[in-house]
Length: 170
Ligand SMILES: [Cu+2]
Image 1 (cartoon, helix red, strand yellow):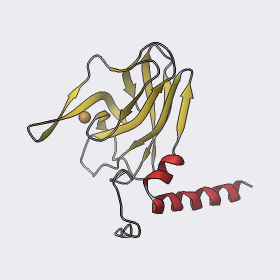
Image 2 (cartoon, helix red, strand yellow; image 1 turned 120 degrees about the vertical axis):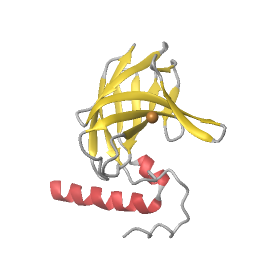
Image 3 (cartoon, rainbow, N blue to C red; image 1 turned 135 degrees about the vertical axis):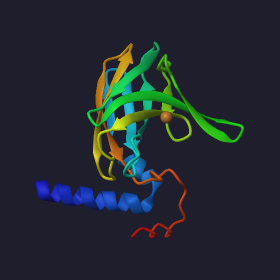
């Protein structure tokens, strides 16, 4: 049974990689703890020598009151901070959210490229595609959560691709 399940999972994964964004999202990991749901937590591979990685996910607050992501930690990095990227005069810059990131009751906040993200600082070793990175999220107003970031290819399946054009690798 276990072998069959593993084979099926690999087959599904292969299909999802070819099919692109929608299937990848549909198969993505979800976590729920109390009123908080985390969808599609992912990261990107880091080149050797680059000491920083990213963390992306969608955080949904099913409660009535605000919840704030105040901190996060992982065994793979010395520290994790919460950042916001903004475009200013054509240049992308990012700033730490010192007060944390608030998710109002009944709303979803997305951490994604060019927007809110987690910054994994002083990585112990590069993040490699296919890895799953343990991450603890600390909330104010909700219980802490242990999740895993799936390390996806550089485009993260986030870019639009032409069907049949996805064979450039290797
Ligand atoms: Cu950043």
